[in-house]
Image (tube, rainbow, N blue to C red):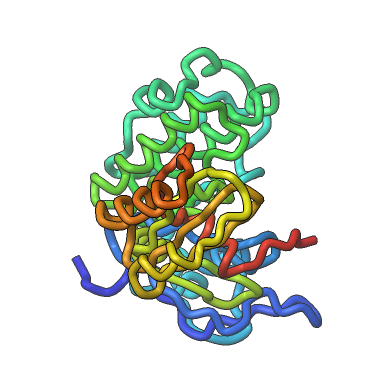
Amino acid sequence: MSDAPAVEISGLVKKYGRTTAVDGLSMRAERGLITAVLGPNGAGKTTTVEICEGYRRPDAGAVRVLGLDPCRDARALRPRVGVMLQSGGIPTSARAADYLGVLARFYASPLEPAMLIDRLGLGGSVRTPFRRLSGGQQQRLSLAAAVIGRPELVFLDEPTAGLDPQARHATWDLITGLRESGATVILTTHYLEEAERLADQVVIVDRGALVAAGTPAELTGSQGQLRFRAEPGLDTSGLHSALPLGATVKESPAGVYLIELPSGVDPQVVATVTAWCAEQGVLAHELRIETRSLEDVFLEMTGREMRA
């Protein structure tokens, strides 16, 4: 297997009229890993993935998928790449068992359709036309169609959108199974918990450009938080002085105290806080240790305002 990344993008630009959807984006997805591409609505992630899939041509920059050009080498890539679309692509009259059975015949070593139907909870609707399936069932059938050929690389666009908890967990198990079998997965999702749970690598895109990339652990960092409740209006200057260099202490809202430590929370920090509370003659309620989540990082990088 080549050491080159499964997907490599350099200086990608895509414009629609006067609107720049992708603005000099560079990123890579390593082979055999799950890479989550995150970004607010309109960030350019869907356009980027569509270019990688060969559905759109870039205006500038270079894109390589499994070492090939996704447009020029589309024919060579087709049997090696699986694509899950959010909508469309499956005939409205198709029935799950028949459709997957037909697809399986196009591949040398397909997954067993019956296994996919069972794992994705479609057993009760195998004879139901696609148009009559629920949104969640259509989503799961689209996923099965994307992976039935045992692709080396699979693009999954919002694979658990609209799914109930049981179906979401079954989908997660299937995605991790793809990685365990050696496949590369490119995942776009608005569920940051999903990205944090599944992804080996995370790429955050905003306004068509890369704003952050790394493993979930690298992006969230070692920063720790300690939070507790006590009577409002305490003078925390003495606590701040007793904590390690770089720590911050703030009260927000009233009576809720948040301590942030770049080096993380250790037993000595907890002892310092409880000792300070004892000196003040107050009892710390609901004292808990927290760490930054991927959602915290995402909001820091892209802002909290709603996008049209």
